[in-house]
Image 1 (cartoon, rainbow, N blue to C red):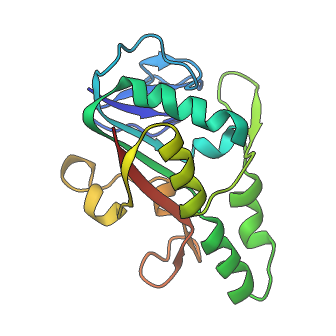
Image 2 (cartoon, rainbow, N blue to C red):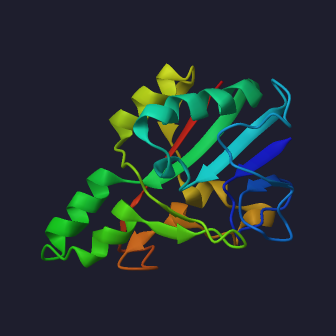
Length: 184
């Protein structure tokens, strides 16, 4: 089983989709903090792109432990979050234009079908995210490249793991998503 947590409107073939939003492809409409519908050691892959930053830092380790519980031994958690280091670089290199980094830092999203609005509550760099993942029990923490992941049936998949400044300049822009994976 492969899980796509906090998937929103994005559908990935072959994944079980979990989100609070009201879309037809959502298999389980719920908060991704606690997932009692999934037994221990049942998922080979959990994918969560730009989800973790919506949780307070003091609750993130608990959320990651819940996801760790569901993964099979050797299973992989693949995350994307706004990359603070890259955002600082964008801010400096683009004439201190706060508008370019405001959204990724303080993101606001209205969850379709709920009327609920959520905001980013924290930001990460590789070191800080690695520490959280280690505390939750993950090992072999490393960066992943979206160009090597989104191939085959998912080759046209596009989400915030591929966020660049300038927007959509995937060849010359600065990737502002920190893409990290870790194993159980």
